[in-house]
Length: 309
Image (tube, rainbow, N blue to C red; front, side):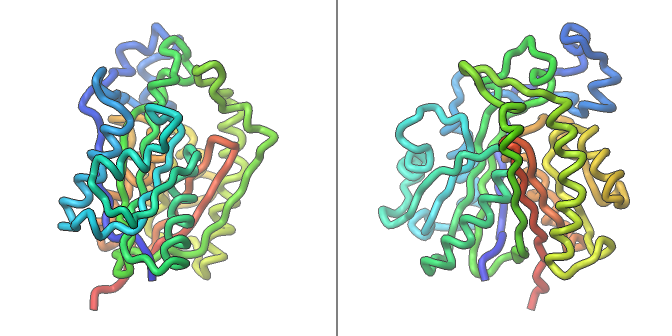
């Protein structure tokens, strides 16, 4: 049985205060607080790279779990903003961390749905190849491509990295997954000439119409009911998106936390950043994980806490 054992995170210390610059971008402090939800955005330091923050998350994970780097069988990185196009960043992390030559490394070019997609990919890869220790990394600093004068993106995206350990003796088992893509809308969130473009209304409408039904479908697929879910861990696209999905499920708002107010929408890192805290709470026996966005794509699963024997 392959599942989630531990998560380590890295959030840069640098912060941008959204409340202070709201008016210069055609917004207000009230809109920042109540609709956007991100009071601050985490930012890479001038001398930090994507490799730096990804490797820091992996280093923290290995230290936290007292794991020798030689034991890692596979390392997968989810992200779309590496420092260089070639080589793949998973190989660069491999070299910096001194992982075993027999460790498989590859990248997944996905955004906001990437962590949940990545869980399915790495767990399947490990089972198929009789692997015991896998690491799933998320690192996608959108600050590299955001126009600081663009209201639709400049108040949204923050930088962070995470590393998730998957083993045969997990804290949380992985359930069945659902996936989807609405490729006809892919251009609504895209990078053109190295600058991010987002049609906020189109992305919101996509999330508000597709995601609630997909979550309900995934819960049924896992032979559970809505009231059996202890926590809904949704991609932190914005406070308004999270609140809207909560209303349309419907679910107890206490079960659908918004936890990204101090660092922003960190793309593929948003779900594992939340999980790193929520996994420590034994009350969370069943949690829905749902990522959605770039593509337009989505992926959802349910994870179940294992009883200690």
